[in-house]
Length: 189
Image (cartoon, rainbow, N blue to C red; front, side, top):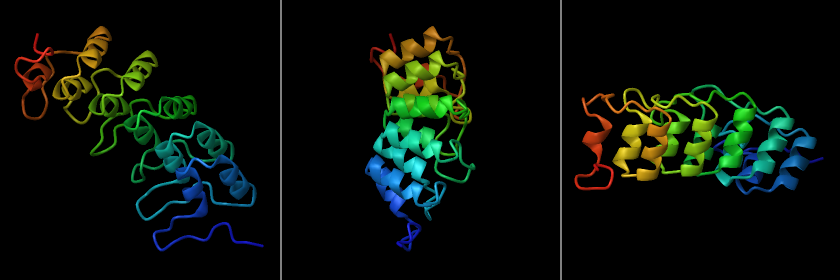
């Protein structure tokens, strides 16, 4: 037989690669033959993280069926943050349906809502707010509204304020979201 758990020097397995490519049939065959569902690369990526990179909702579901941890330990790369960053709403929704903390704050990234605002992923912002994400919880003192203002993302700003975002909150630099809006932009109005 073939060893399905051979890894590269960076601890990348065949399952990692199959998931990164969105190759669900390969991933399933590897898992059925004993591939480590929660294997971790030297960069902290799991096969589930890679499936969220590729946006393969089918791979995400297969991995979860085989026991993948939907929310890995804090030091590992976060699948939900990656799904949101890339705008893969379906992957995000599957993870949330599997009890991933909707307001999980990751160092350097913030919460999923903050990431969605930073990368202007309107679909993800809408869904996260609908599902009850904390509208003012972002990255430390920076709120999702700060992120949206920085990007001059009027549609996202309206969504956040519709869900009760606090316009007066100040970040670590003492700035409100309005202070971060580009002067004379439609955000400032």
